[in-house]
Each structure stands twice: as structure tokens, then as C-alpha cells.
Length: 181
Image (cartoon, rainbow, N blue to C red; front, side, top):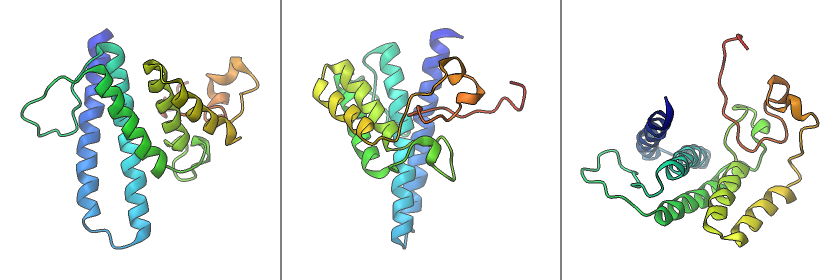
């Protein structure tokens, strides 16, 4: 599988996210209430987080890469790694403003969902790569000062089923092994 598999998966996430954002924008045209506007903003932020995470992975593998935000684009130009990282930072600013102020395991209807703290984590990771230690400090201090997170007491169990969706997790992919542990 290797390198091509992971890059292909990241590009798939980007194009799927772009399609989802187009659908959400069509949904927005019919919004009639503030509750629906809030839901639109949250869903858009969740998708933008996932797309930004994919761009983060792409830059880890390739470095400079095109910022693909429109699946219908006829020409695609390669952006510098600095431009891609700035794009991710801008996306995280939007996400931080529109995602719930909860731990991922506190989201009642979607346990493990992306939250404000997931976005702060990605913002800090990208800032660290750029040597922007002020942003790293601010983002991580906001996570720490929330007092919502704590280290899991048993490191051996953390990455096993007992540690799933622990209070330590800022972002955790959910999947099913259909009971075949």
C-alpha cells in the first residue's frame, strides 16, 4: 500500500469534503431559522476540519501541494507549503469559531465528533511546523485552561477498547471492527 495509498486517500478526503461543502451551500440557500444556520456552520466546520487534516497529511508526504477547494477546477497550480499551512490555519480559525466547546466524547449525538479542541490541536500542530510558537502556546493553553481533558490513567489500555473516547482524546477516528476485535 505505502505512500501512494495514503496520498490517494488524502486526496479522496479532500474531493469528498469539497462535494459535501457544495451540498451544504445548497442547503444554506433554504435556511429559515437561526438553529439551522448554527447547524450549517457546525457541519461546514466539521467538513472543513477533515479537509484541512487531509491537507496537513498531504504536506507531510509531498510538502508543497495544490490547494484544491473546487472539484470543478480545470487548472490546478501547486501551492507552496507555506501557503498550504496558512490555508489550514485559516480553516482552523473558522472551525474554532463554529465547533462545539466540548470534548469529542461529550458530543451526545455523535460521540467522537470533531470539536473546537480538535481544531485547536491541528492549529497548534501546523504552527509548530512553521516555528510560530506564540500560536502554539495560545492554542495549547486554551486546551489546557479548558480543564476538560485529563491523561488516561493506564497507558497500556489507552490504545485498546477501554481507552476509546477517553477524556485524553482531542481527535479520534471512529470505526467498527464489527465485533471482531
